[in-house]
Image (tube, rainbow over all chains, first blue to last red):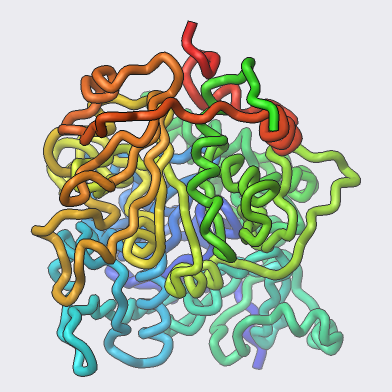
Length: 291
Length: 266
């Protein structure tokens, strides 16, 4: 089966009101080119589930978001995501604020087709008090109460991988897969952008196959977009673009705001975007972060 | 061991904070921020070589990495993979001690990393979010580092958003006891505290040189339990300062407490 498609074809499969999971973590390995294609679309009322970075802020600023399911939204070296902050402080979005680990459990429950996973996490805190939909239940086995973390079922997940073949075998070669395997499994459809499209034979080397973290049946579509994680990182191919993120954060304080950012960078296509940020070579030359 | 006479307040805090990890045995020490990370690194290099640490990205290290840019030929002492999903397996096993810097800490030891003021639906100031605080606080011991001890951090009343569970009887989950909550040290620019007072009241453990108990109380929005005898926070040794300097070659610690004051007030 050939699953190769374009970013526009991915967005054509999305609908208003969908729940969309986005892989990566903060400023790391986000499917930004797919997010940019959503920014160019008429989609609205989305529920976004993410270990959030700039993609959450951008979608909020563009008026695409009804609700965010999050544990944090951060650019790491810029701790507070400027446009997510504006959206929260203006009361324009609904939220389901949970613990990072609760999100992992919710994705696992959705992946496994079970309604919830019991956990201690959240007890005694406002992630329970502020989320009446998250129930605390008695255990059939002990006298304690437990959080019943509900399945976070996703209509669609968007993920960026280092490499993929057209059949949907996706490789993440960087140091961390984050929760991307669970995002892939928790969604009805998973679309993966990749920096490099490879032949299936590439994975005949066990060392390469070992870096494939979910089976191809969990991948609906593959979109080759070299540099497609920019301005987030795709270690080891490129780091995150610190000057770009600074310009993005600064735009939130300017009168033209996010619209000004889009006019300067977004363009009508990914090709235009990459030209606006200095080209693919410049992206691939961005230094890897030091932690 | 030679006690140093010339050290900064940040270095004093790093040494005091490293005590949190000294007797923990073989657990993952997670220090978020420069002072907590150096505290964990110092403990691993001196008082507790059994500690585990990550590179703050995805690898477990058998030797902590120095902070900041490292030479091109630097080889980190990687011993295993430790991506974020495995971190949660570790967190829920309880074999971890985290040291973090929340925006608010109330009299129950509950902390806030999420939102300040306004309403929850429309907060005046949105911050990070709950992050991993709910899970950390109910799964394993935690300590706090606060670089500016004042009544905005240690505020009157309850946190605007409770990110981490504390010693609050009103929020105690069924089947749990307050003793299940395990908040260890609170290190600030003024003192070291814990929640070892009567009924888990916050308690003064030591005062940094030249700081008075009255000053700590004035800068804390709720009563601090002050024992009859409060020692002065132990000064770093020359050996400890040498380890800290090697772990922080770019002197990032100089930017962690306002104006980088000396450890002994003049």
